[in-house]
Length: 248
Length: 269
Image 1 (spheres, rainbow over the protein chains, first blue to last red):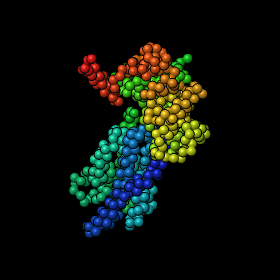
Image 2: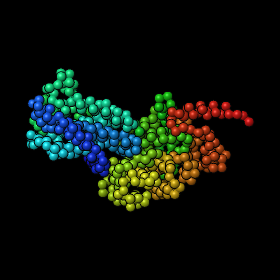
Image 3: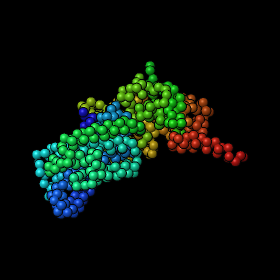
Image 4: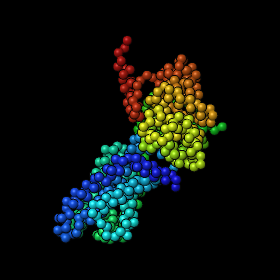
């Protein structure tokens, strides 16, 4: 337990010291929220779908968590380059524990960033319909974060230079985000888009968070929960398998 | 008594390249043992195998009675290591780096504060314990790494080029600590260096490795006698030749080839 705690603490300490990372973590999502939320609000309302800001905030929360969680994998590459990974790999501790402690640390950071964004969105006029579901919202945010971090740990373990890591990120994450239900309602898009969004696990995270905040759901909460659980498990199995393969 | 380090017929292959080729040696408890050789000779590969970071292709390594490949956790508890490259977390303070190491190595919680204080005072970093490591000089980082690897009372200390890039004062200071530790705690020291003077003045026994094979082993005096040299540097150059090596492993063979060509095509006098 104390090993997992100290590895968690390491991630949190590093984050707290980097003011720039804290600010950058939600600047980009904020721009999305302002540009799209205010920019398309009238158009969205005219087609009878209600407020676009209400609709888009859950999607932007998902974006914040996705990008900050994915960025976490870069830590593994830094640890490789700055040598700290070797210190952990020769320690008499199982690699599973090393990974688990670090994943929890990363998930905490992403969650904090997601919550900060939620608070900012309240200031910008977002109003949750179901306040009592907020603990559930946070649970889904944590699950999404764990899933992406497991994946980014795997990628971080496989590649050793930052350029490759950033390229893989952009190649996978941006399509996953844009082809999910984060920015548009699924019932008004062509069939192909609907199918793509339905096999994209990000859509289920968006859907779960959207349901708990504004009571709108496309797939239904039980299915959202099942898909997210499976994604967390699958991606963390991948991540820890790859992490165990690292040779110094 | 069983030797504290025992390497028997160990080889390591990376694809076609044989980095370490059937080496055997033993180091006794309390010995200071230097492992010398040109770049790419197989020194770091051997240390990585002894410290569980790499698995040997064949042969057996034992550390303090544990089979290194099979009893990884038990092996990891008995050694401390200072790597060739820095391995601190730059964004944490000196104290936090020590604390993290203490937890990873299961040092009893009650002992940690006193032990950290003692070691940081030993390497003269106690006053800087709250500073972020990023702000430290190369010498300070090295001293911190030495303090850190002593936290869990290792039986064997591996130092892979510990004095690389340090000034003469810091090098002198480090070797004094290390000799003191060896004398007071009977700690076995296994180190590599390119400063042959350090090896001559510190090591009780030396092994010279080249192209993955041990080419000579003995006390500094024995090595000098064997080669008819007056100092260790001459003995070393006689044993390993004067050709320059590249750093990477896979260029070792190419280098030998280039060296041979160079010797052949050199104008004859």
